[in-house]
Length: 108
DNA sequence: TGCTTGACGATCA
DNA sequence: GTGATCGCCAAGC
Image (tube, rainbow, N blue to C red; front, side, top):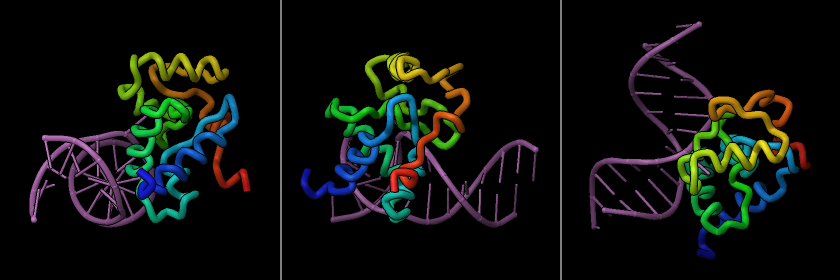
């Protein structure tokens, strides 16, 4: 598990996401250096949510769609968590995505 | 040991 | 403007 340094890096970035904000897989991948594909971020998220120590619900795809909701305990769990953050979600899609979008590069 | 799949993204036709 | 395909890398079977 220590070899999966990439995963640990993804976890760190996801943990840095402010409350009420979300980011995209591609943004994380790009932040890590674009050497990894957005798919790898998805894999990392899959493992991350399993740990339960990473707010994977704050990570969505480029279109602001809750593509990973199926990986949660319940399809509505992800949406519910995001709504608690103050994010509006309709039909599994984030509204005002530009407003709630947080780019890791902004942290720098 | 090797092929397929997989929470995506970007580009080409 | 829309649809389809390729690329990325790792894990599962």
